Length: 80
Image (cartoon, rainbow, N blue to C red):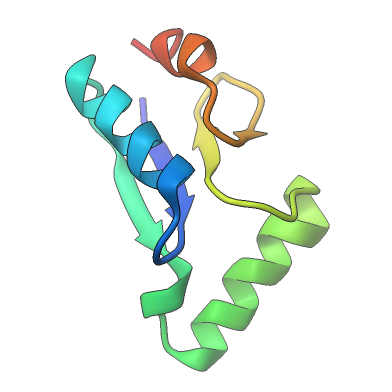
């Protein structure tokens, strides 16, 4: 199962989310929107806002699970 975590710089909730995933042994791909080139950043932010409906980070997308935002350790653990 692929797990993607959309993050940004200086985001405490993003860091805590990645720590929980690492602690649970859940493999994930982190995409930091602040480190993307301008065109890719705009495309990614539009996807998060328009298609997923979120306006804050982190955003977690996992196959077979509904996407969610924010630091939610209980939901993160269900991705095991």
